[in-house]
Length: 193
Image 1: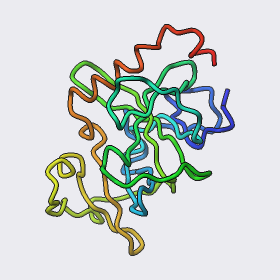
Image 2 (image 1 turned 45 degrees about the vertical axis):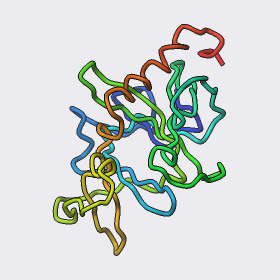
Image 3 (image 1 turned 180 degrees about the vertical axis):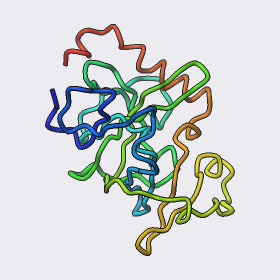
Image 4 (image 1 turned 135 degrees about the vertical axis):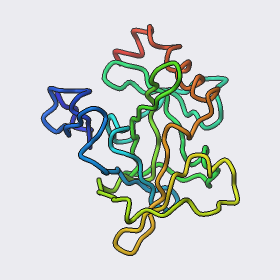
């Protein structure tokens, strides 16, 4: 069963989905990255970290959570915390529009994996980036950004910031993401609808 709002989905997560992309052992056909924009800057994340890409949907607010956690969405019967990457990256706010997407990602922690949604201005395409087109991370004035930017790629005359998704959040922030979603995991009203 494929929800019409899905733009991309990983086949090993949802094997019955006809639009899914095959990934084996967490490696999606080599060096493939999903590109998206924030504040007119193009970013890339490994396709192996992407579970699905959704059209923007209503988000259930959660009280007393970090300011960059917008709330929860229902993704295939499971509560997923949604992060506003503009807030996390300290970028100016932007109105939600028809291009706004939520990328559902999987990150690895010492305790296992955590899934979360990330709001982006737009999702572009899947690109193949080889080591030859990647540059070492330049000196960034911000040590926090340096932690999760693992490189810069150049493709077709444009720069692409390559993110290390597993490092965007500190261990405490990752625990908060997981706990936010677990708080409603048993709420049948939220899950059904």
